[in-house]
Image (cartoon, rainbow, N blue to C red; front, side, top):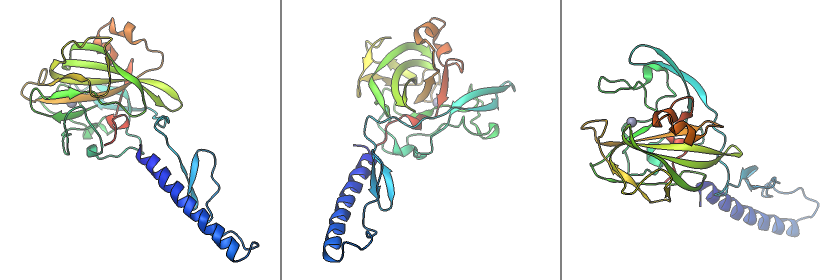
Amino acid sequence: MTALACLGTAALTAGAGAARGAAVHVASIALAEPLSPLTPALCPVGALPDGDACVRIQSDDDDAPDAPSQVNAHHDKRGRWIVYDQIPRRPDRPADYDAYRYPVPCEHGCVVSGYDLDRPDDSQRRGWRLSHVGHGAVDLPQKKGTPVTMVPLEHQVGDAEVVYVGPLFGTTVLTRHTLREGGQLRDYLLLFGHLDAPAPGLAAGVHLAAGAAVGFVGDTGSPELVHLHLEARRIRDGVDIGKVLRTGPGALIDNDSSIVCDPRNVLPLR
Ligand SMILES: [Zn+2]
């Protein structure tokens, strides 16, 4: 049950108590007296009273709110001004990386480098060892060989599907996830980068349920920096993944095909 569903149950209990209180009040004093403040507010269908406010009941199959993309830009390593789309963290999602579950074991403090493509150019990640400016992902250092297992994303419909296994960000696995968002179904990609190896038998078309093996943490493409690079991207409407992949996996993570997204919008909460 989600936190909000719990809130809904609490509101229901409080509402029932308030209703009982109101009934006693009316019976023992006077029918003509105005309804006391304990009387539950009248709420529309799909909402419950919480004091004098209405709280929307959120069930597990509700949509995520819409998450519009925004335009941002930065100077790349060669000094060119690069304009790109990105989806920042929604205001309803916690900023604290420790609030989320990850595909690797993580108690707290596992994310050493977070999402910064929503920040101004001069606040984005740069370093002589880094090939890119900015970071559209989370980095999770782990011991080499640590198993990476699938986590179901928030509002995901069905299993994830492997769309690519091979070189990209070092040894990489790309998976497709269909999410309910903003009143429609949208496809997202998860990119698992710098793997030591993919899970045995993993290939395009394989379906991965929660807990299924994705691969093993490594440092391919990032020598001696053993970590999982976990990136989330929303496939643009109308993009045919199979067709784009025929151009190569890089085309799928191009701004024309998919929009980089703060992973906190889609990762499951603890
Ligand atoms: Zn990274």
